[in-house]
Amino acid sequence: MNNFWSNVLRYPRFFVSSVAGLIIIILTPFKNLFKIRKLRFLLVLFLVLILGLLASIIINMTAL
Image 1 (cartoon, rainbow, N blue to C red):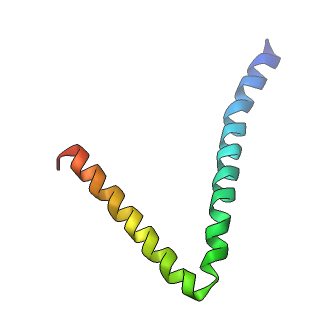
Image 2: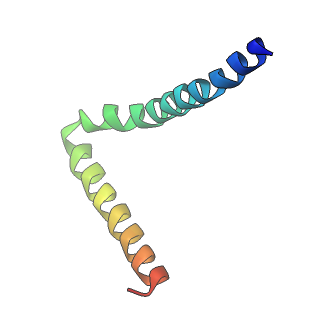
């Protein structure tokens, strides 16, 4: 029974490390694009646009 709880306690650590790895894999191409001067402006503009759109959607959904 002790071995069972030891295995159960390993799952949260595995989940956190898997999600962290997924985030790193997803953000790596954006980091490489950020090195190019022309694309840096477009990337920042795209991120601001996405954040503004997300904020607008959340404000409209919550009727604030």
